[in-house]
Picture 1 (cartoon, one colour):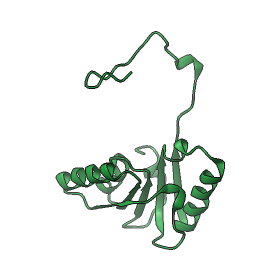
Picture 2 (cartoon, one colour):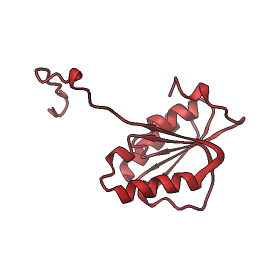
Picture 3 (cartoon, rainbow, N blue to C red):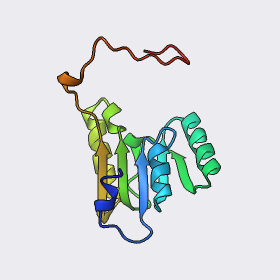
Picture 4 (cartoon, helix red, strand yellow):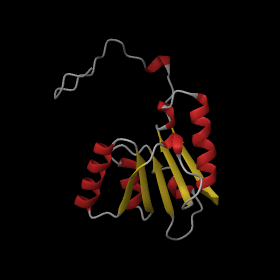
Length: 139
């Protein structure tokens, strides 16, 4: 986001929404950079953690339980909507389509939709390298 946000033509006091915020890294980043920020997530525990982090940092972020595949078309419009790997984890095409149509309904006329994703590059595959989380043994 450090590379993209400065290039956007935004109004003063811009508003932002992060879809699938998890524990809020994108939403918190946007709040730190002057956005009136909302984060939507389906996992209640992640929302609770996001709220604790925001409070500890003195940030004002609204975190709400909303399924990205069920976004109501009516409601506040945003200058920026960020999808940080949320739609990447949506399996069905019809659900991804619903996300896109809903985002369009919730963007301001000159708003931006920023999607982050990952791309597989065979040259970056390192089968001999195994990364293990020492805390829980997850590979």
